[in-house]
Length: 617
Image (cartoon, rainbow, N blue to C red; front, side, top):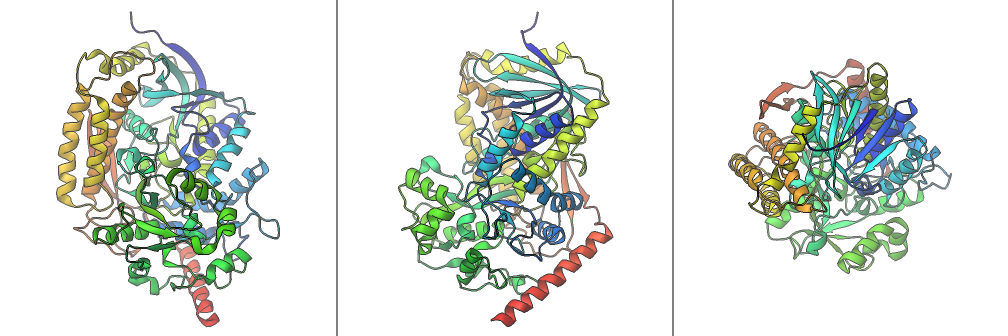
């Protein structure tokens, strides 16, 4: 006689309730599938809320020269030419409709004087294209999707953690979860499952992610036989709070720099001018100069001669620059840099950045309208993830789909700010739609009791050990190790040592003891999280070791990189075989000829724009 559990049957189960999960569930339900969302946390707690700056879509409200081709070009260029070009095409073409759809569903975006959706400037985007709601865009999108979702008849299971995907042959047939509050077990039969659990950044000690971000979806996919790609590419957002310690890593939106924030070192030098890449004076659109004229022009809506300050270079460049200043002894007192927007004045800051003003006032005792913030790089986003089909979002395992940060492909080696929110709504919709259509063709799978009991046995193992190390100590030590050895700057020796360290952490994880209770036992939850964190940290480290170049969010000090679309392009693919993680490299598929033509067309437009700006001076 095994453990008791409660059983359920659904057509489509979405694991995760952030922007991607909600959008997938809404589309699945609208397509006619009986749909459920299972979320580890509470509704409204998703990391989508952290995407404050805006949602990138070529609406052409700020500049009529924008369009899907320019957005496609910027995404491919920002990705260092490693993005899945099919996904980048779908994204650039469909993002405007998805944003307008949100507006129809009640999202209240900031407006221009002509009452169109306003769009702000962001690093790596040729034109201002981020639709925004002050500095709380992600929050508004979550609010809108939740409001819409409750009318679609979706069942929602909050505070349930999924630990196992059931399979029948090569096909996923359901999942096994436990309820975090009381430790009860639940088994779900599903014709299709969508993974939308977010990212993996909790594997690093300085991160913007909350406790939920432990790579659950990535690990579930890996254990079920799916492939992961690009897992070496972890984006360290340039600006997270570095003081006080209780809020270390909390995000400071790129919108602060988008609205004119300047970065200074301890010597009061605006140091980003020292880090402008040499290639910037070639085919780039912008002129980098020490001017804030562009800020006034954005505010007044006159955008013909926008000049981009160096603080708005792509995130990887800014993050590495701050890291270099700290290492050179020119950092702020708590190991970061100073970000100052006080010159904009209190009225403008309260109008444009109310959440940031409140956040620093309440959490750090800093009034950003009068004094600078202390900021530094924080592990923020993983470009890599579960490998999916560009059109359907199905993984390499039948009936298993992934979207949002859990999936890979759109962002390549580096994600542009604002592309994550449009990613969620574009590919969340696609995943939900194709999962629901697949479900229509399938019979309801039966729940395999043997698989459920096996999964429950694995979940209960830590509670039955009777003695062992506190899982919290292992958790903290492993995150510190990843920060030190697989952080923003990497070298071969550190990465090899990290893999040895992960072997030790794996052994410690198997012997830890969180006590015996299943009720309200956060130590037990942490003991289970350690398993995915060890495996996903190993995938990220193996991929970082295999990529012997610097590119986007992956910097090898022993292999400096260069920015050229024609240099060698390979992908690192990881999978699990007989309990062992394997890795292989494969070439990037050549881009379709019409898309190559679109890239050339946009480059000509950018060169023309640069010439106009030059003559306007």
